[in-house]
Amino acid sequence: MPMADASERSIIAVRRALLSVSDKGGLVDFARALAGHGVDLISTGGTAKAIRDAGLAVTDVAQVTGFPEMMSGRVKTLHPVVHGGLLGRRDEDTAVMAAHGIEPIDLLVVDLYPFEATVVRGAGYDETVENIDIGGPAMIRSAAKNHAAVAVIVDPADYADVLDEIVRTGGTTIDMRQRLAAKAYARTAAYDASIAGWFAGHAYDWLPERLIVAGQRKQLLRYGENPHQRAALYVTSELRPGVAKARQLQGKELSYNNILDTDAAYEAMAEFDAPACVIVKHGNPCGVAVAESLAEAYAKANRCDPVSAFGGVVAFNRPLNKGAAAAFAKVFTEVVIAPAADDAALAALARKSDLRVLVADAGATTGDAGLVVRGVAGGLLVQTRDAPVALAATDLRPMTRRAPTAVEVDDLLFAWRVAKHVKSNAIVFAKGGATVGIGAGQMSRVDSVRIAAWKAEEAARAAGETASRLAGSVVASDAFFPFADGLIAAAEAGATAAIQPGGSKRDDEVIAAADARGLAMVATGVRHFRH
Image (cartoon, rainbow, N blue to C red; front, side, top):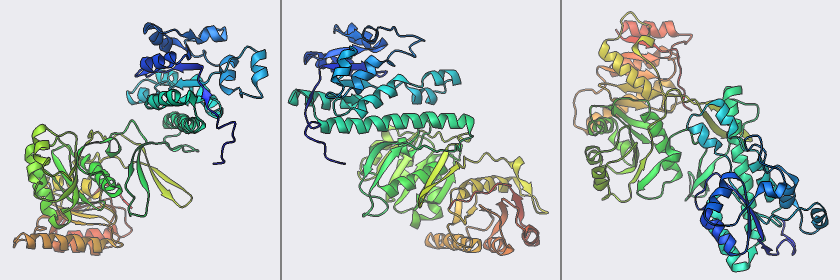
């Protein structure tokens, strides 16, 4: 940034301040402190009332402009006396301001109509539109543009710093005004992005011609995927529960990779209604199970691949209790996330001081579309979210002579939900509401089958088991079997039923291989690639 010249570096005394805020938190104390330093206060509507009720002198904007607030408050600050006071340059515009009776405004304190909060609480269309602020952004932009002479506050968190500077220097410095201006423009940009995104949902079915993405930085991270990369976590949606809005109750600072793994676990956890546990390592589930209790679900999930579960992330879809906490207490775990945690669970986990404990609403619902954004060189790749699976037994299309049994259907639906969260090519073996073998991210589907079978055998061998874990299991494939080899490998490993999207040119070949081995196979008609 070019260095400011000497005149811009001068300290600007604050003699007149305009305050108009929806969030009244800290307002009265701030206004009282300004008045104590001889600052004349101007205000609007409810803000003026709050200041006046506190026994402070305040001038209504209507008195300054000579026009009353009109159109139910839609028009009150859109006036040359206001914007001239904010935009007027203290040197070349002084004569013009004097000629038109415009007095300088040295400090603007404005937040915006709570548009985002209105959307979050599900307000109707007309009410949401009424909460689009016009005068606020206009004033903020005027003040920020003229930051050579005007300070603008859009966040109550800056009240204390501004007051401290006024006390120390008698006014505001250019460094402070520049910082506040940058924050002000970021706020109006994010506000407009929220409005544009909301309209896009109505007018463009989520994919507008011009995409605007805005986020509020929640925390700086120590580094990114690797120590030489810088990183931060931003919250981009107030509508969507999830890891970005999770509260950390204990443990070390989250890393970039912790957040990625925790997000993967959270999204997979949201697929299940019954008590469920998901264990994730390096972005892939390495164990998933449903059971009567969280403790049992964890034990079943961990049994799938205890080697990979070491140093992983654990997600539960029920409040964490003492039993569940005890279940994974002896396994090194980086993060655990759940909708809540009771006192007994937190007491049990307190001894593991490095363990990061997060709580986040388990509200990633089936109907939640939203957008998924990924960076590519020079651009963004955007798609609607692959929402949780709403699949029932009646949605399955039989492909083979033998239909699956009721037990197999339950496991097929379970395996299908898990496969959606495994990197492609994805293969998931399941039995009894738990994964027993997972093959992820291979360039050929048959290799994913082989890896899943091998990992199941290794886990069984390490546990001292002699029987095959895959005998009587079902297998899920996130996309169709392009050849019969993958299906044959799954059958040879012990699978008795399969679920896949269907639609391959060689479906007949794959179906024939299943029939020859007595497998039941069903098609979903839906693919769940995860690249």
